[in-house]
Image (cartoon, rainbow, N blue to C red; front, top):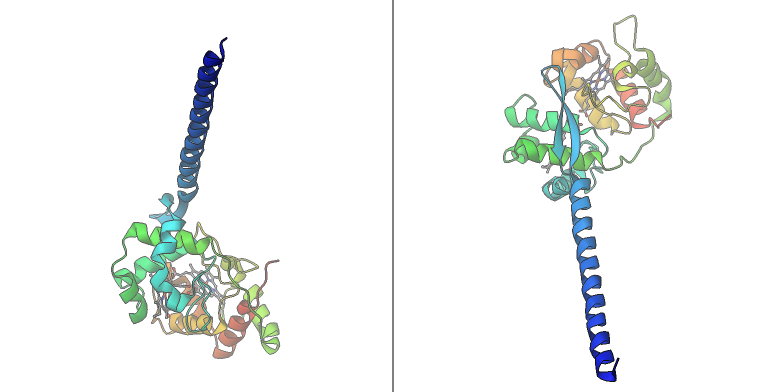
Length: 237
Ligand code: HEC
Ligand code: HEC
């Protein structure tokens, strides 16, 4: 090869190398984009007409939608003020049901009904997927309430007919996403006690078959307060 031919060969060769490099970068970008899209698409469970139904949901879109919620529930769903429930780590199936209930008036709360008015079903699934992906910050129990609280939580009260909370909400309060039993572990005691009193007075009546109205209906105020403290301090076990 002459020197001139050498030059042309190497110029072409570097051009080919550059082209290969560009194609590799392009493939990488496309593959990464495709896998990210896949990562975002998550199936969430909801329970409809006695069947478990799976829907695609996007926690990244849910995070964007959650911006107006942060004022009360915190950026990651861990509210600081105990009048607002923590929703971090909550099952998306339960969040979806509650948001729907607030929208159609089955669960009544002025602050929440304003917040859900413009959300559609897919938004509610995406919000559910986002909060479910967050981690709840756990709390502590008032030591004076642990004995009575634990007794009610684990065995109920056979004399008055209070069912054991553990039977549905699980020994550590993790609930059951398929049955739409909410996770209650680490929830603010003040919020829990308010909800139990609202179930008892039937002011909250969006529980299927009245399960929580029945449970709370048999509870005394002392039992409500003790079990709420106990649940606030529940830890994974
Ligand atoms: C102004 C304060 C406020 C804002 C903003 C707000 N919430 Fe709420 N949220 C509440 C209150 C108060 C409750 C409890 C209502 C009750 O006592 O029944 C609640 C309850 C909920 C519940 C039910 C929790 C449970 O454990 O049952 C969910 C889910 C929820 N909010 C999601 C959202 C989402 C999603 C947004 C944003 C679109 C939002 N909230 C914005 C105040 C707020
Ligand atoms: C038979 C099953 C069952 C038993 C037993 C039961 N729960 Fe529930 N609980 C539920 C279901 C279902 C819901 C969700 C209701 C709804 O759809 O809004 C719920 C909701 C709740 C909520 C509201 C959660 C929230 O984030 O707003 C609290 C608090 C609660 N239960 C506490 C208790 C306590 C305390 C006990 C025991 C004294 C108990 N539950 C026993 C099924 C049960």
